[in-house]
Length: 405
Image (cartoon, rainbow, N blue to C red):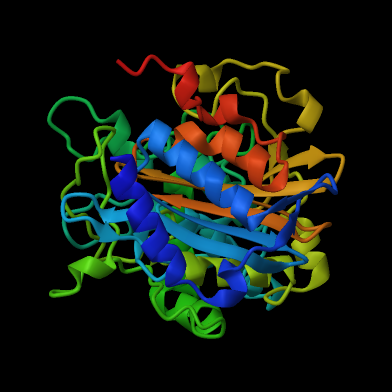
């Protein structure tokens, strides 16, 4: 396996643009330096040891990408090499793009962060009917708490909704029931449902679909030509997509999203999403005061972990980094300024990005492997000196902490 991996690694590196593939000094947030060759070695060692099928990495210095490479396979079954133009399922990285789009509309006065969303609708939210037999928000009829939900609550994950209603499904209902776990605005609880609600309201206000707005405002202006909220595999282009892989490195069946979903339908490439992060770091898309608001802690996070039973247990374990949520991004404090992070997680895909706007340093990690998160802790330390990401809260348990029988 190692020989095959190194052969693929070499082939991919030779195909990279010289400006991002040559050896160069790369600054970490603590002022120390590493080199692209050292990062190459770390990638090869961690991927081989932890059985990570494919990985794409971008490191940012001075608000720009200074290192961008792809390693391993997009499809382990036929040994198709991964490249920086390979299309990944972006999962919840979709939310970071959506948050910037929302803040553009806030700047323009299209929507206010603290006006209840019901104010923008022509009829009560539960009365809207949806196609494809989706219940929409009919479960909320009789519970007036939906009338208090705002855009700020959706972006900060404080709507009180579960992450996804289908994850709480019991019995014969494949969708589950939408309900409030907490009163809106009272507690952080990660919720894709909240972002979906905000998307619905924005589409009602503007008369435009999410895909059209994202293409017009973000994807096309930044040259993100292979990025879309409608993630559909094109016939004959299978080699241009990254298949997800399980922990045994077996490819998983293709998954598609034929409807644009702010919470997690985006397909993108390492090169494209790096353009988005560059634009955020260099404040191209929003006013300076809007960026400050987006990356300001809006709600403190005291849960022991982000998901699972421990999400209901409070602790002070992350008090030293002042863990919290901004508007669409997780935020933390470090001696080098605020860190703004966003994860992406789905079956076969595990991603992470964190940027430090004050220093212009950041990193983007995309993997098509269920083992990807097991190398994130060490990876962040070795690439940009990030020892602040709350890996235990994220459940990024290192491979060498696990019993890999």
